[in-house]
Length: 460
Image (tube, rainbow, N blue to C red):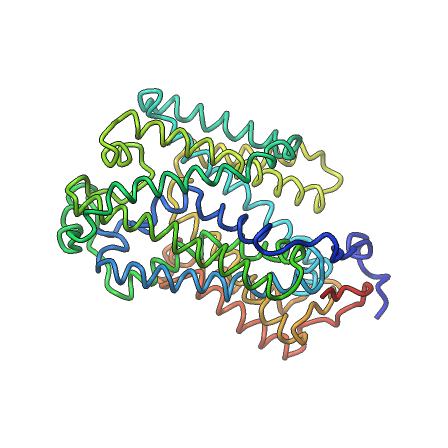
C-alpha cells in the first residue's frame, strides 16, 4: 500500500541514528529513577493513597514489600519493556510509533495528544504538593498555599514553553536532594523498625486520621499495584521515547531494571521503612513521610522539617517544567494551527483548578485515572508488538479500530472503581489486561488495517 495516504508528520519521520544513542546508565536509568525519587511518589507510599487504616503496612512489612516488588516488576515487564523495545528498534518517538496501534489518523490523538493532556494533570499534582510543602514557611495559610500553587503552575508552564534547556542543566543533580532526605530519615528511624507492630499501627493510624478498616493480604497487593502502576503508566508508554535513545535491547532491559524496578523498591521501600520505624520508635504514627510535620517529628526540629520540605519543593520544580514541555510539544504537533501559548495556557488553567481545589491531592484518584487511560494503551502496544513479529509494523492507514475499541473498553474497566460502577481490584492492571486481550481478538478478527512502509526504520 502506498504511503501517499499518510499525514506529513509520518512521511517526514526519521529514526534516531545509532551515533546519537547512549548506554542505559547515562539516559534511561537516571531519568526514570528521578521520577520515583520525586517526593509525590514516595510521600504516600506507606498509605498507598488510600483511607484504609495502616495503609500498605496493615499486614506488616513483609506484605508491604511483597506488594511493592510485584508492582515494580509489573511496571518494568508489562508497562515499559515493549514500548522501550519499540523505540529502540524503530528509532522513532511515541506519537509516530502509536500510529501502528491506533492508526495514522487515530495515533495523532492516541497516545500523542492524550499524553500531552495528562501532563497538565501531573502539573496540577506537582503544584498542589509543592505548595503544601512550602505552606509551613507562611504559617500554613491556605490562601497563601493556593497563591503559591497558581504561581508554580504559571512559572512551570512558561519555562516549559521557553526555557526548558536551562532547567535541564540542573535537573540531573536535583534528584539527589530527595535521595539524601530519604537516607537521613531512614537512618533516624532505623532503630524503631524492629519494634514495629502492624496491629498497633493500624489502631493508632485509625485514631489519628479517622481511617477505615485495614486491608486484607490481597487488598494490600492490589492497592500497591493501583498506586505504583497508576503513577507510572504514562512514563511506561513514554518508554518509546527512552528506547529510541538506547543502543540495543540490553540497554532497554538494564535501564528499566535499574531505573524502574530498583528505583521503585529503593524509594518506595525507604518510605515504608521510615513510617514503620518512626512508629516503632514512638515518634509518630504517620503515613505521609514527606509531610513537613512528620519530617519535623523525625528530625526532632520544626526548622529541619520546614527546610526539608523547601528542598523537596525545589527539587520538584524541574519535573513540573518537563511536564509542561512534554505537553507543549504534544500540542504543537497535534494542534499546529493553534498558538502554543493559547493551548498551553488553557492546559495550565486546568492545572491551577486541580491544584487550588485540592483534587490533585487525591493521588489514588489521579493514579486511577492515569492507569485507566494508559493501561490499555500499554496492553494494546504489547500485543501489537508480538503480532507484528517483535518489531514496529509501521503506520496503519486511518483509524485502527482494534486499538480504539480495546482502549475504550479498557478505560471503562480502569475507571470503574473511581466512578462507583464496580469495585475492581488493581484497576490499572485490569485495564492493561483488557486492552491486550481485546486488541488480540479484534486484530485477529480483521479490524487491524494493513501497515504502510515509510522507509527503513529497523535500528539495531
